[in-house]
Length: 232
Image (cartoon, rainbow, N blue to C red; front, top):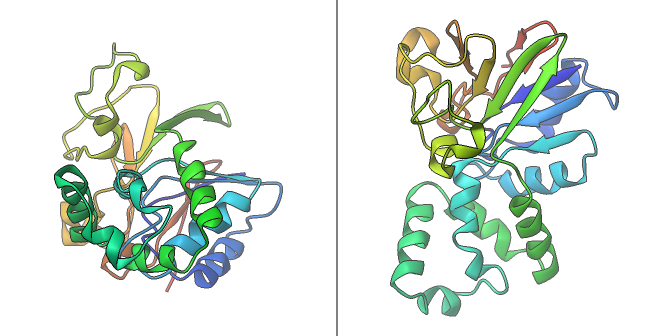
């Protein structure tokens, strides 16, 4: 079975493990996490380290992980002095990250050794921007935020990083006819209160960001039967 979740945003790790286990997820299954594991909540770094050790899981890069990577100059040693010595470009990247909920993540990174921070950096550098998979003869494209500047005739390799990380499709946006695009990034309640805490489906795409950043439990989608799992 193939499971997908997005935008966990530091949700408590042990609670997320309980939710995942309750879906029937086992060592024989596979989990895709569509980015934004970190920031806002407290357990983002714990979740990253857990995922990095999980052989049957893959992280697809989200814009919050990309913001953390843009501040990789902090990874060798995170101190008040190192933060105070940033240049203009570094200050811009650092400010953008902090303004978007990075303080919790930075605090957790401070508690790690240089080697542990380096391991996280390498793990994120290896994270892809998308995955194209087939489950039960049905094709899926998994990304963090959908596809910006979409053209059905354009190769995926021709898209820019921000097209995968920072686009916000409307309910009128149409993607591939024969591929279901699955993503998060935009909490579904942004599209209307009727979607709060739930997935949003159109004919060509599914948004599974149930709003963990706003206090809602993340939802999990099983691609084999398109079953949606929700939690208290």
